[in-house]
Length: 206
Image (tube, rainbow, N blue to C red; front, side, top):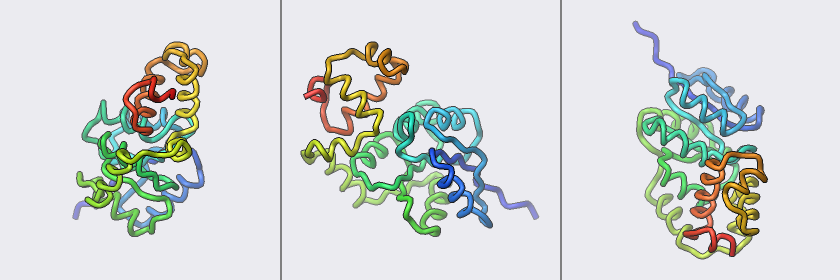
């Protein structure tokens, strides 16, 4: 009788305790962690180089976020299922994740059964978004938000880029100032515009 095929996943989270916790939850199941990443850049590299069945990405990481990593992965491997997870329930991030092609999003406080079921469903090519969740996320982008609410939807690095934009710096100048590539700046700016619900740099700066 052939051995049960394992669902091989990539886990990206900057906290070792979280990655270890994920592996502990998978003990005794057909799901196995075959790659780990502490940052979004490594997550993208491993996702593109390795033959994994699913990528599990933390929404917030030190060098960017899971949404940026999701975007890069989907550009190169559009069929690779990506599941996001976070300690915070941010509707703006969920709306963007849906737009970028994520198969679902989980809170880190979910139960083991919910976690395992989500991985199995997403690895099988389905998604775990429900209609109510999609509608709520969509409304969050249409509803005017206070500055504080917009700020909490941005990662630390996105907030830094936005401050530079507000000072009138170009993408090239921001890249030099933050010691990152101009292409990365473009990605940050695109994410910022989407998250705070504006269409151009001037509106974002204001």
